[in-house]
Image (cartoon, rainbow, N blue to C red):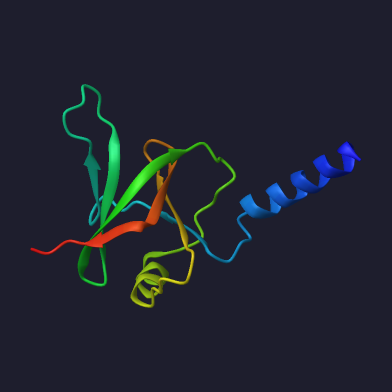
Length: 118
């Protein structure tokens, strides 16, 4: 019985973390338009989030590094603009940013996203 339980949990875990899930969007960081925001008052440079230009607005995404190496970029900037434009509180989007120069993925939370006013 334990083996069946472990197998079911493993299958459900693979399904939950697979990139085939329709609400996972992975896009690449663009050095020309995007900005990295570092934590203040720390001795080492830690990334606290990213500011992206989306639909002609600066939008801040809070972030955490992730060790998931199976992610692949699946969303371009045009698609990202449409997703954010048609955003809905009831949709659970999972955004990941890929920093090509560091070869790292960062999970960015849609709940902590805000439009900055200037």
